[in-house]
Length: 348
Image (cartoon, rainbow, N blue to C red; front, top):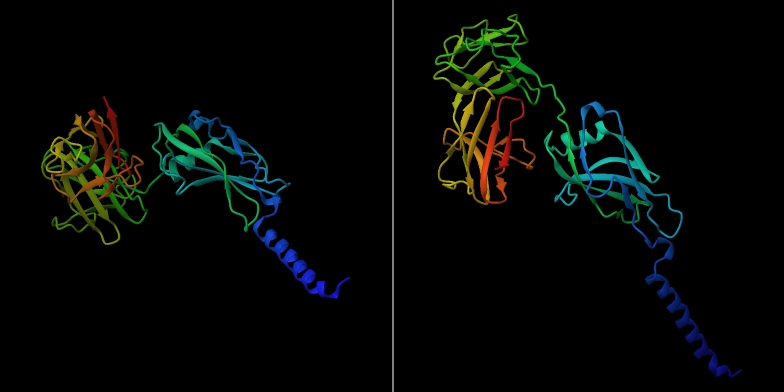
């Protein structure tokens, strides 16, 4: 062999080896290549489900085909659900499985829908479900295509601390659980809306359904005293009552509610007055709306207004505007005689 050819052959060999290493860097192992995403097989896409409390302990089973990574992977599947249209920005995990099915219960599904996603009870809502698959912390999560379900959860009764409000309007009965206000945060601060049918109604507050611990207001100065004087309201109407037992203070506010917003006949300029029905304890209004937004407010003022953060049919003070997606004639209800304030919108 010509000795002068050796340097050239060595250089070619080094280039070949270098080329092999570079090729390996750019071509990942075929074993990590995703060949098929998992597919949810049950429940079926588009299924309508109505959950019932008497079926709370019944099983609810989700099944799927496995993800195919080209090798036998130890995969963990997480079943996620979220409100339709939310793009799984804040999904709720129903459970995890290393197989191709997950068995939970109707109660767990209902809790996820009603409590975590804050969907309204006894009303159908669209949700999406998908699988999140992990095989290794260093490998990206793989997601299945979502399916859409129309589900109607049942209302879960949450027991909030309450303060009784006996008075002349209801026979001075502290055991009447229809005339109470609530502490939603369990912090000794209570609020509620109660209808006083007569002018100059007198009332007091009791802790529990007896007179053992009761509070009134000597002097009408907004300060509560144990066994104090009767509290007096003004003209008949729906009053917002607030009590802080931490510092023994209280206040009341007579309210007239209205609807306002870009969807209403006068836009954001003035309220459309709602009507209160003592028989149903609801404020209602029927009117023509255009596409736009609405809110509820009291006494033609922004001091007390309610919107819907999260659009979950529950109301918060100074909450977000509520969209009206299409023009039409609507009946709208405002329900304030409970711990969590709610509303309904029905297109006629």
